[in-house]
Image 1 (tube, helix red, strand yellow):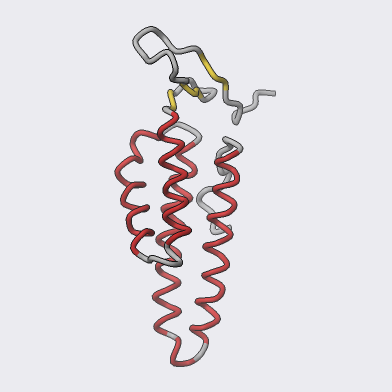
Image 2: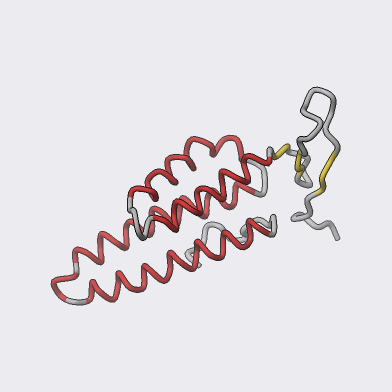
Length: 140
């Protein structure tokens, strides 16, 4: 049985720096190590958004700018996960704030907080293990 999540490290050809390692997915699409670092920075932006809300917007802008570069790699699932986390978190925040006057908004905001934290932690842990998110289109 073929392992789709397996990553192998290949030697660098002469046109690249001798110190640089190139990661390849099983479909041989090249992944620059900097793309993994960018993905980590986006998770950090999402986590920091609880202190500085603007960082979530910065993170999703980076997602959209770099999205084409990760297409067809295991990092694509992380980008989809991060984008969905931002937009659904934003939507539930708006609904929660709008319903605070009937008190149900506080519950919606609390659930949203836990949900966003869960997605950041789950995604970041899978990224550290260099694994894709198997169901990046689901809410959990």
